[in-house]
Length: 219
Image (cartoon, rainbow, N blue to C red; front, side, top):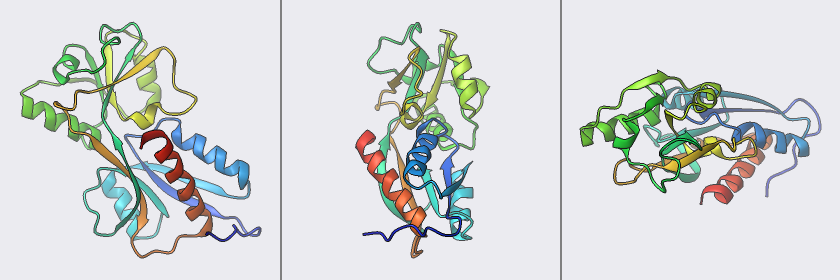
């Protein structure tokens, strides 16, 4: 059982989230937490997995949420959830009615992909190379606003993580469809902190909330 958050001072939760996960999940979770603990402030930044791992080691952040980290040597995993890559399309897109989308089908449309250094892009590129598929990004971005705007065109398709579509802000005019697992491996999102570190109470309580929500939505 965690102790109470001190009523004095300014408790600060510092965390890193993946560049591939910039949907409404994080702000909604912060809002829910601050409803219960309004004295707690947050500093949340997106970063590559390498930058997040470095930030944990030098104690510049408390928590990190990593999609397929390079190493677990110094990372204590509090929880992990599957994140099968998804194709996001408008409801009027020709692929919108399919239960699954094949990777080669994505190549037939205008593709919006995250930057080459992102874990999602690496997953997709590795799968395309293995299958001999030429996936060319017409737009490279990790900006959610770019995805939302471009997906209003029924010829555009983006590849994202399911966590980007969780929460109350998901647009009804878009549909997210799992990529065929025979084409692209399922990745995992890991929640955790530096191994051996004792977390500040506010951060430990927030991690507890996040773990419960991840389990509820994705387990």
